[in-house]
Amino acid sequence: MSNIRLARRQFLALGAAGLGGTLVAGCDRLSESSDVQEGLSSAEWLTYRVQRLLGGRHALAREFTASDVSPVFKVNGSHMPEGEEYAALLESNFANWRLRVDGLVAKPLQLSLADVRSLPQRTQITRHDCVEGWSAIGKWQGVPLAIVLQRASLLPTARFVIFHCADIYERAAGGTGQYYESIDLIDAFHPQTILAHSLNDVPLPVGHGAPLRLRVERQLGYKHAKYVMRIELTDQLGRFGRGKGGFWPDRGYEWYAGI
Amino acid sequence: MGEENWEPAMSEIREADLGQPVQRSRRLLVYRHARITRLTHWINLLCVTTLLMSGLQIFMAHPALYWGQFGADTDRPTFEIGANESGDGPEVGFARIGSATFETTEILGVSRNASGDTVQRAFPRWATLPSWRDLALGRRWHFFFAWLFVANLLAYFVAGIASGHLRRDLLPSKQQLRPRSLLKDALDHLRLKFPHGEEARHYNPLQKLTYLVVIGVLLPLMILTGLTMSPGMDAILPWLVDIFGGRQSARTIHFVAASLIVLFVFVHVAMVFLAGPLNELRSMITGKFAISFEDNHE
Image 1 (tube, rainbow over the protein chains, first blue to last red):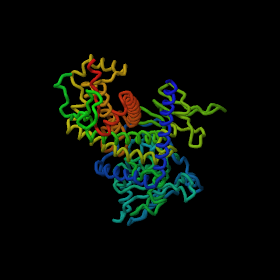
Image 2 (cartoon, rainbow over the protein chains, first blue to last red):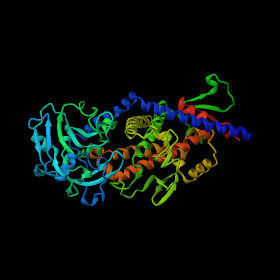
Image 3 (cartoon, each protein chain N blue to C red):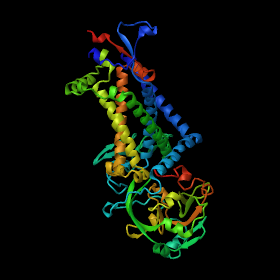
Image 4 (cartoon, one colour):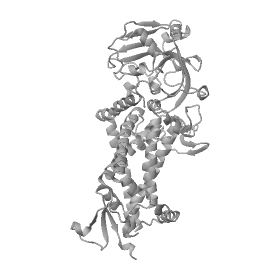
């Protein structure tokens, strides 16, 4: 009797382990299939549509008070762009740095850091949410992207804003790991979308993207491109990087990172 | 229970009427679960399993929980999974709640990869979707099935309210809520004494309360705390952040509620096995549930 029971127990345990193993293997097979990945990705479009429908252009991210600021704002991703070019810029304290604004614009711009600081400013204390799960609160100061874009005067065909960055995050075999990001015009003209030059009342430290980083407050951290060198207006994302509109989107992450 | 408590909505079929032999004189097949209940139950199982496993994949990217608006490496976590390298010896996985630390090697913090090597990862490979570390793909699975989960739960609520299923089958009666009947029911559960005859027609009070807490509290809580983690949704519905006391608190509650759902599933499956797995499973597939009366007439 007890032998039978033991055999039955073993059978059940083996059965459960076998079933579990088959499930894990089955799920992995599904995960490897590009059709499945594409099907799963359809949820991103739905999330984007619904959040745009509900939040529209103007829903604001929460702004906090000075007492809410994180004691330490974590540095993530690139800590310091490699290469002599950036090193030279850093050494001159970005005196020779120029932000290029071009692509589908009527008036291409070249802005120095002093130019950026002399444009109308916005200061906001907001929460930065990393795709990994952590959050940090910091005080950002910079020029609203909308003001820069208005000065450059967009052509009617412009649909996306591309941010070309100085850092190479992972040098990949099939092309460079040059960091870039992109947003649509709704986020580009959102009042809280700024090109920040200061964090917590001091000029951006190198780890946080000196001399200039994007803040796009209704999306996750990887959208907030650091070390911005050039802003390009375009009508399509396909011809940049691997065609998905950003360094991390090219590596499987959502282009719309509102969730 | 008297005749007046008989469930008028349930259709009764004597096995004899189905052309099957009457095994015992008093065995009754009742129509227990409506089609929508059965359908949403199995879709929910698929969604919750996928969400749980892809959720653990996502959590592996930063296996620490905080309370409040913010939380990162230098802030004090309320819960944390990690690995210690103890000199020359093997790595030791640990889980820490507050100041209490537990060694959890092979399960949390340190486990084996596909080739059998010991690696640092918060959860073992059999528990995550996909089994290898891939935050991007874990998120794809999570958000696709999150939409399906929400749609399925909404369909269940709409149908359950329209048909009266929620009120009739899940809302405990005043009688059932009396301390005496709750106590009796708790003791019956502890003795693994399952209802027979008339009593088996309805869910018992603890069963009703458990289902109500899971369906009415835990599952909606998962959705709300999940939405609170979305920076886009926080701009659209700022009160989300307020009701949970911050995005990181919401993330912690998301994890706790998920753990409670796992606990429920364990108990739920155990109860199905103890109460008669074939009969219980059949009732959730075909809707028919057999009630035996003979034990009731000792």
